[in-house]
Amino acid sequence: MKTHLSRAFLLLPLIFLTSCGSAKNVAISDYFDETIAYKSDFRLLQLTDLHWSVNTNAEKAGAYLTQVVKTAKPDFVMITGDLLLGATTSTAKALVSVIDSWDVPFGVTWGNHDREGEYSPAWLSKLFMSAKNSHYHEVDDDVFGRSNYVVSLMNPLTKKAAWNIYAIDSNSYPESKTGIYYDYDVIHDDQISWFKKAAAYSTQQNGTIVPGISYFHIPLFQWYYAYLQNQKGLMGEILETSTNSLAPADIKKQYADQGLKVKFWPGYKDTGYFDAGVQNGVKGFFCGHDHSNDWGE
Image (cartoon, rainbow, N blue to C red; front, side, top):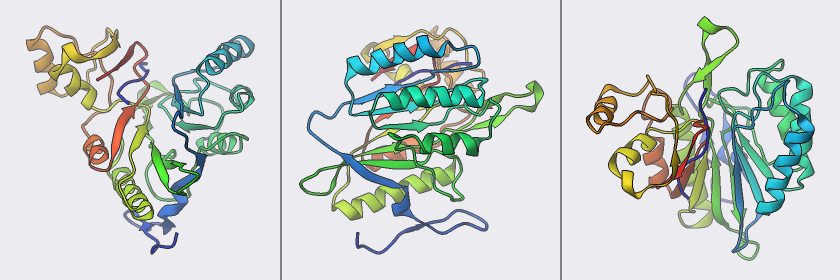
């Protein structure tokens, strides 16, 4: 499978978020974590695709990750999916222990491999929510996905949000033909509706559109578009060699016309999340998933 990172970088009436069918009424404020203090030199570190499994040397891998964090000196760490792959409960607990040993606030968005273990998604969520430095937040709602939440970086003087970190689940779904395996999915329509309501709530609370960054696992189609339109102005490396068969025919034709291979692995459609994010103050979108791609625009 593929995977890595990309693009750069209360007293108002309650708003309730519901989805279709027998939806649960959940206050939009429940999705917000406002316990992180912002400062002018605030440092965010993204880690992705750790792929801890039953074969991982926890001592060696843990020491490497710890050194990365010590060198970066972040104020917050976001891990964008595929933390685990073919793992046991012991493997998952060992990884959480390493992450907590950094004594740095962290968040998580899930990838397409995280469910491939001997545990349930609910067990995994509870494990990460219970970690001492965790700001992973999961609300009991009817919105698709599990890791949909907002971490607001709060100005300690004004008590208002300086930035919002939007975590959103890019999802996965079982592929029955190959057994215990989860294929790529996309950010769903009700998640985009949730995001818009969360952004609107933040605007109401703070009196202005709060700038944000968004983290998820599987790339959006905008990685395709940016590469096709601006190949000479990109920063970083694009080293995937496989061709994504899910790419639409028109995009494949554009690549072929320019003598290029399709080197990205998004879900199966352009969901509109990028446009919704830009319209609501998101300044950067960051993902994982494409292991050999590490670039931005």
